[in-house]
Length: 160
Image 1 (cartoon, one colour):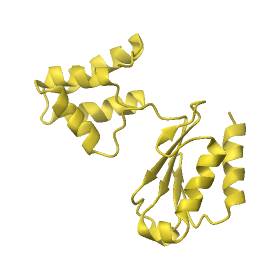
Image 2 (spheres, helix red, strand yellow):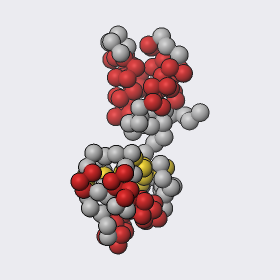
Image 3 (cartoon, one colour):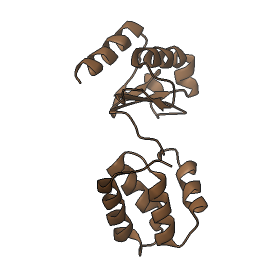
């Protein structure tokens, strides 16, 4: 089990304390922990389970059921590539491969330098812009020029 630092532990304790007496507190706590920490450490799941009088398996089930939750720290720059039907037909597989190659990162992982996280998603809700990627919250559509993709990733990396 990964160890978290004292500051993160304190933030988790504050979140648990703030929500423990509310209706449906597990999901509220999980959202806040992820917003604060960038992911949900196992230690947070233990504290949430204890505060809500449910099993850790119950909390873990919520974490793994909802795609927005992650148990792994994300990179500084998060890239989501749509692999839905419209995007796939229009070349999202090549887009995903190019992004992975440019970032030095595998799909659904974080790069060794912690700079990038790449996630393949089912649908980003922008089928008319296929293929689509969301980079740091900004939608990029009609991405067909792989050299442009490489330049964008290089520019992001160089800005660090």
